[in-house]
Image 1: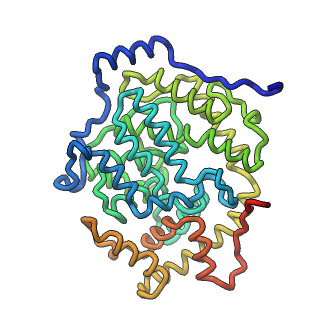
Image 2: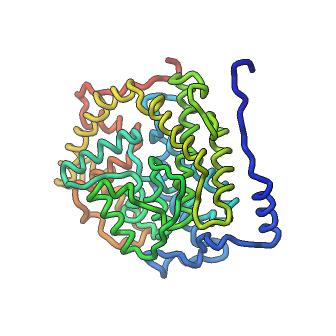
Image 3: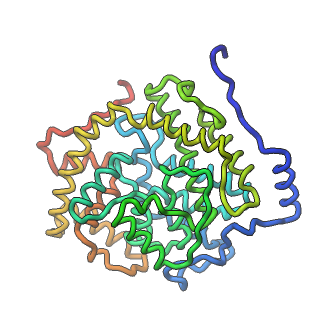
Length: 406
């Protein structure tokens, strides 16, 4: 088509392809892959692996059967105020991350079950209304407790304390370390082997927001998931922005070595990472690709994420709604009236849903502020809107969605 650049899909070098074929023919394994036999759980006498349900398959199944997993379907990925079934929600995003990460992981002969568990669980603690909701909930929690909220830390809290799934240390570590806002040219794992260290990492992120940027995955699989999180959203968010008319086409982006479109970015990033990481103890991309990768993320912020119209709705409606709801729910949490919405829709729900679990802590002993944050972070966008209307029927605060026929 005239005026339209042809897509560019790179391939692995013949040298790397030959090595991969030879290694496969000779049954060579990756010595840096995490092996199932080294799995660590809080309760090692429970969830013992067997031939038909290996260690990290168990983690995958625990995550997808967690009651909060289904709530991915109605949580904002980037675009909150539109009704459009073709625009990504968080449920699709975690699947995209899993697919990209398993593609890389399979080529590198890593533990695909561990990768899948980390990918599918990495955003389960995310708030309604995406990073805007996360930002506001952190401000509210900090104002009351001096502690910060981060969705990646909260994802581990969901799967370790709210629903004590007895997930492996390796899966939980990959979840807290997935931070899709931080790109690096090289990802080298920093192994550790105790929940005492993991718990301290969690606590450090609650007390100092700078520590969230210091987290490094303990496994090579966690490093793959971390970079795949960015690969998965970079081009897909551009597709969604085009569907909504925020940008005309991918041609508004520079592209560079990785390309402009979703398909180009996914293919070319996967190829370059495999090319530079095969047989190594770390994940790496070359300098040209890293420069293009970082620039592409900056372009997304400039042309998509910093959209003034969305920010206006957040500031004038969503944030005030968060504040008012938090205040009301905190009041209910301190009173613990069994007839309140807080008790019936959160406390009673958690108590009943976790009866089959082997709980190490009594959830009712948690601080009221933490219980409220747990409840609000668990909400889908629609539930948040409906609950606000229920709690404050006379409020003039209302979120207007762009409908299918607008």
